[in-house]
Amino acid sequence: MMNKRASVVIVGGGIVGCSIAYNLARMGCKNVVIFEKNSLASGATGRCGAGIRQQFGTEMNCILARESIRIFENLSQELDYDIELNQGGYLMLAYTEKEVNQFKKNVALEQSLGIDVRYITAEEAKEIVPPLNTKGILAATFCPTDGHANPFNTNFAYAEAAQRLGVKIYNFTEVKEIKTEDNRIVSVSTDKGEVLTPIVINAAGGYSREIGKMAGVEIPVYSQRHQILITEPVDPLFKPMLMSFSRNFYCQQTPHGSIIMGFGDPDEPKGHDIGTSWQFARKMAQKMTAVVPLLKEVSMVRQWSGLYNMSPDSQPIVGEHPQVKGFYMAVGFSGHGFMLAPVASRLMAELILKGRTSIPIDRLDIGRFERGELIIEPSVV
Amino acid sequence: MKDETIICRCEDITWGEIRQALEKGYTTLDEIKRVTRAGMGRCQGTTCRRIILREIAKFCHKKIEEVAIPTFRPPTKPVKLETLAGDDDE
Image (cartoon, rainbow over all chains, first blue to last red; front, side, top):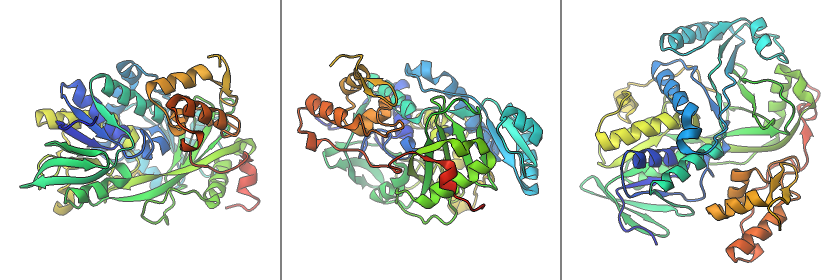
């Protein structure tokens, strides 16, 4: 039977929703409910590239990512579930002078914030990744504590830990209506019944704009397909995530041995399409076999896609809506939801239960777009 | 079926692991795939999908045709990246 009342209703059973539920419950909040229209990790979380990096171009992103890594490092123990964290580093490759300049700036900023990162030559990059073709590489940056984790395991780890603390998760339960009175949240209706609640957290990822509309608010985010492919498992070839902004790719071998790779198509239309195309697989194969020629011999076994939920400045929107009391948003992660969820969920729980956060995130509010105070991140794939 | 019986031969997933996932409440093929990796290997579930579907149906007291099947993801057979990339340089 479904609860009649909840203190908090979370829309979305991905990493963002489940981690917020866990942190709320951990901080003592009772009667937290998650509604997931499909099953856990069925959306962007389970489709993501699984990378976790601290190498960003804005102070806000560097600090959030640094704190997220610190949480990731202890998360398997904290949640009693192996999240398969693998800190093999991120090797960011610069192919243009513009990138070289940006990387120098990024490294200075990151080092000033205590992030262990260094600016290196193409030869040094090849020492870290021996099969790398250094042709065209002008320089690189390397952060050894970056890496990746298993998104399914991390999602389930948060969900199961949340359930042990009393959180109720309703799978295959679709939110249909969010009712407000005098600009306050009063209830959420689903295809399985209605729950009275003073607080709704929109963690619906690719569908967060639609959930916003149900509460009568316009959230300036849109969804966009990103495709990805994975190879058969092979012997260890390289440890770090390889990434380039100008050549537009990311590629990493998981501990399981399979190699995952993707790129963002600049011509991809906005929308909710999560189909796949052979054109993507072909272009991806062309890109990566040029960078790591050994990959020519490795076979793709599967391709799929998922939705980035993009905000106008590629930064998440985290906070309460100024016009609808009790309507909180953790949306618009712009491809970084998995890596930022551990820290964003803690801060969201602090905001709701204490009214303040241990890291200032007031600039991530939805009002920044009207004020024209965008936070432009230069380093996004 | 014994717990040690291997159901997914590509990923070495045993019946015991799948049974545990079912008992935890992961009762769709998609969820079992995400929790255990069954069906994510080289053959993409060609061998184990039917067996797992049958066991889900038994566990949930459903007919096999009532159990949702996961999205088919290309390619049907593994393809070398060299073949995919083709001859022309970008």
